[in-house]
Length: 142
Image (tube, rainbow, N blue to C red; front, side, top):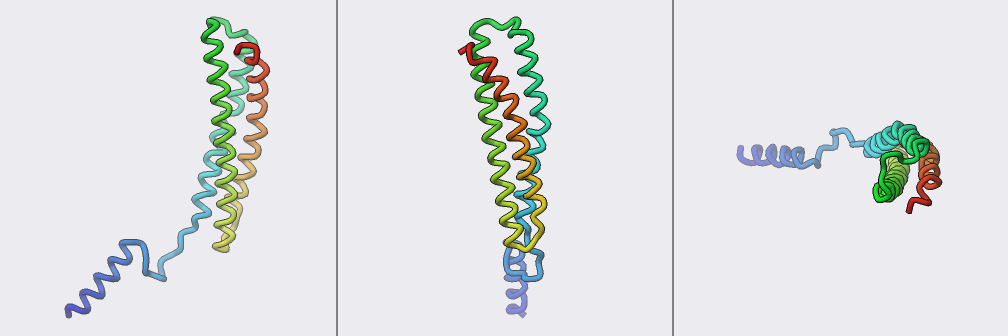
């Protein structure tokens, strides 16, 4: 009787610790990487027109109400923000590629990772506009 209980408790321990049951469905890590890639791409796709509008608005008002020091801080903050966003978009592309590789290895569709890569590449081009507008507008402020 003790041997049967011990065998059952070992099997339960393996299930609780995440291993040992061949009947359990395999996790498709490609879906998780693809969802992360699409999430990053979606957020920055929504923010790109807002960033372009902000740059155009500040240029059209010629930083009205900003002191000289505020203009420098805004220029540096804009550069840091655009650099950060472009780096995160590149991370989104990497997440999409990892998703496609993981999905292919697990013989699953790569559509989620491919959509993430395409959306993040689009973000890269969309954020080039606000980045260039900010660079052209604030270059002489530094």
